[in-house]
Structure formats: C-alpha cells, structure tokens
Length: 357
Image 1 (cartoon, rainbow, N blue to C red):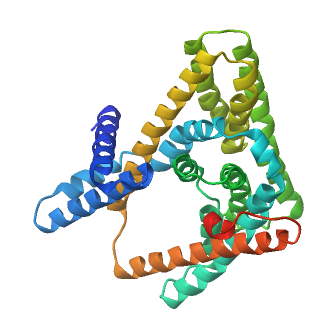
Image 2: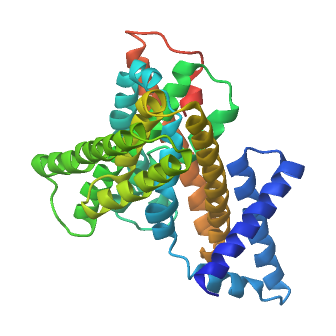
Image 3: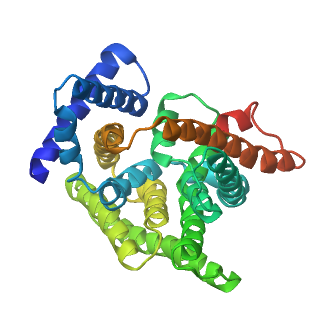
C-alpha cells in the first residue's frame, strides 16, 4: 500500500471507531477510539489463530508508518497549538509557581522513582536491564500528555484554578522531560558524563531557546493577523505558524513543543483580543477544534493498532502491568510531595492531588 492508501485507511478506521464509541461505548473521545482500536487489534490476532492471515497484512501495513516521525514531525505541532490556543494566559499566570514546580521538580522526582523501581522489578522478573535505561523510561513517561489532558478537560467541569494547573503543567513539562532524557541518553548510548554546565546549556537551548523562538514566530504571526481582516488568510497563517514554527525549532535543535505552546498562547490570548474580528475568532476556533478532533482520532487509532507490532509473552505482560502501577505511584508521589509542602503557604482545591495524579 502507498502512503495515501494508508492515510485513507486510518481516516476510515477513525470515523468507524468514533461512530462505535458515540453509539455504544460513550467514553471520552480519545479513550473510546483507542479502546475500539485495541479490541480490533485483538480480533485480528485471534483470527490469525483460526488460519485467517489478517495479522501479517496489518503488520506489513503498519511497518510502512514511521510512528515517531508521524507523531513528533507531524500531528504533535498541530495538537499542541490547538490546545494552547484555548488556554487563558491570566489563569496560567495565577498558578505559575505551582506549574513550574510540577513541571520541573515533579518530572525529575517521577523520573527517579520510575527508574529505580522498574529496575528492581524488571530484575526480579528476570529482565536484566541496566538502571540507566530504566531512568530513560522514567524520563520519557513522566511528562503528562497534553493531548489527552486538554481533550478531557473540555468536557469536565473542573475549577478554573485546577484546570490551569493541569493544562499548564501538561503544556510545559515536555521541555524538562526532553532535557532529562537527552542528558540520560548521553550516559546510556554515548557513554558520556553529564556536567552541570552541559545540562544547563541543554536546558537553555531546548527550553529557553524554544520559548524565544515561539515568541518570535508568534509575534510575527500576530503582526500579520493585525494588519488584515480575512479569516481564510488568518487561519492559513496559524497553520503555517504551527507547522513552520515546529519545523524551524526542530532544525535548530530547540524544543518544538515549547515553541509551539508559547506561540499558541500568544495568538490565543493577545492575538484573539487585539488582532481578530469576531468572525475570525469564531471560524478560527471551529477550524482548530475540528483539526484537533480529527488528528486526535487518527493518532489514538494508530496507537491502538500499533499493539499488533509488539512481541507477546506473559513475562512482558506482567512487567508492563507492574510498570503501569509503578508509573502511577511515582506520579502520585511526585505530585503529593511538592503539593504537601506548598500547602504550608496556600490553599488548594479539594482532592487536587488525586485529580492531578
């Protein structure tokens, strides 16, 4: 199959599973679509046991999709921009210290807990994986997922302060996760020794540099939006901002997620108030909401189908289930410890630790 046929197939599955979810499952969109895709993958695998060779066909098709490129160099920029576009900057700033602590200390603490506990559990199960690779797992799994978080928040009536904490943390902790991951990667693969200076340089380049690029690209787009009044052209400018800004950050080895989040916040707040007519605001919101829903559906269908590519053994299943428990426990501790300390200075919404976990 060529790439257009694969794209058409994914789009068809996305529509079909979205329909099944709305008619039968009634789950949040992304969860329902991925659950339907997981069940579909299981059925394909079971049919293989009866001599119906659909699994091999599905695997050969999925092998043509570079999942990491499709995500990191495709849909992620649009999903992050769409999410940041609807975040209120004033609400975000009111919770800035909590967001900063959760996105830095919380991610680092979770990385350490996940790394140490999975290293011990995997060793107990007979998987002799070095500690550094378990810490790499911790670094990549600890940042919360802005795609899932922001889509669920749309339908949940949570307090504004709590919504700002959740969305703010999920939008910004990717940059810290990248810095941690790359520092650990140098030890694991390049056998380097991370220095304080090297880690600081990595942080400045990835996070500060990404934010600066986001301000530059977002500011340029804002100036263009302010000087015209044509919603079709203005929507096109925001598309170029999301795609081009991410590509530029990637080419300059800056944090693409941070750059796009900053640009989206700028356009969604200052641009919305000062540079757009009422018609443009309405059409822009409709376009990006539709774009987000379609890409979310396709992404989570692909995640569900990717399970067909995984090797299956009970040892791996047990290790995976225990890893899920470890990650959730690490998330609980990495939220509870800083929030408990901050309770000495301020009040929080009821059950905030449970909800953030």
